[in-house]
Image (tube, rainbow, N blue to C red; front, side):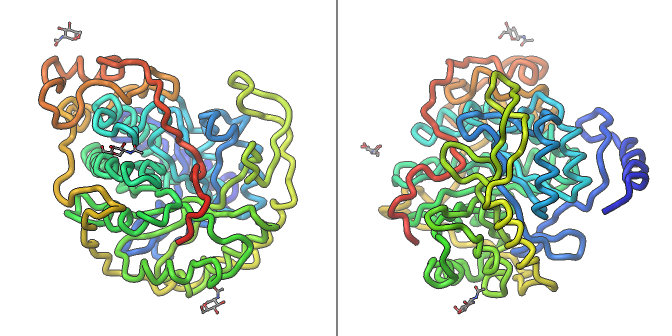
Length: 448
Ligand SMILES: *[C@@H]1O[C@H](CO)[C@@H](O)[C@H](O)[C@H]1NC(C)=O
Ligand SMILES: *[C@@H]1O[C@H](CO)[C@@H](O)[C@H](O)[C@H]1NC(C)=O
Ligand SMILES: *[C@@H]1O[C@H](CO)[C@@H](O)[C@H](O)[C@H]1NC(C)=O
């Protein structure tokens, strides 16, 4: 831990570096996380995700906890006590400022993995084609703009559980992968650091491997930088009975980093023994750790901290006392007992592409080309995305300017019009039933 004097000196130095999107922001100097082969690195050191899902207010709250220091600061104190190094945040408001929370996290050595989607601005798994449009991408790119400036932004998720347990939902895969591709292209075009982009898959046996292969197949422009999936199959169990051993075998030789974007079954008394295996050579050659679901206690009962009293944002988010539940100590103890291993964990340095999966009864995706980016979104690569719509804008799922429809692409209009008015064009109000939950909705019977 750096002393306060050193930290502010570093902040002063980095404050004079303007970000590519303009605007001079004070940001802390931390070592960014990079990808090499199938592993993450912090400088020359292998980096494992040892974190928590952070979603105070729950999935339905759709609240950005990093936009309000009154919310994030008491939680960061708890994160430090736990000894975690990553949090996952599901909803962030791309119209708000995050300097204070992000810098406080950086000072604590904590990185952030962000979902670039939110319930109103996302791919609709029931009707994916129209939802892949310029209004959607404007929001995604604005989220990138809002967080690219922080060195402790570890990675972006291009989608969360869009592909689900019904084969029809696999038809959404090419739109999520197109988004993933576009995010990487945007990061490059805007001159940002190479922030990793990847998908977070639901805990679904029928299509987990195909999804993993799909996101790592094709050209380098199309391949994700990492793959993550949610896994609730270890219920106070062990490496073999949980089925994790077979999963490691099935992912043997996978070319990009793999980690659990959620784990933490609550069926039995939780001891977080998952961490022992995640940090063991049984797994480290293929996996790079995971995020325990979840930090705050919500109606689904996965939390380790109860947030009481006070409220902001219409009572949806609580700012009061943080009460540690018994699982808090158990989780902290597990992290302490099973630290990140020394050395490189036997990672595979030659990350190579997977074969694209064939279409079959579980995977209704033609191998082949991805949808082209919607015409109206191309302008963002040169002009930037402009102001984000935030979490409560009109939504994007039925906006016009979809991919490759040819009939309603917004090819006219000045670039001024496109970049400024993207959030307003042709939108019907979003009544999507899409559930952007932190937890697979249908986990029952899904054994690998
Ligand atoms: C899946 O798609 C097929 C063909 O489009 C359709 O007939 C069927 O009703 C769909 N099933 C579900 C559960 O949506
Ligand atoms: C490692 O794998 C062996 C063989 O499957 C198993 O017996 C052992 O319990 C595993 N240990 C951990 C910590 O996963
Ligand atoms: C900008 O958009 C408005 C509303 O869609 C339109 O009436 C106007 O002609 C556009 N301006 C240019 C320069 O394209």
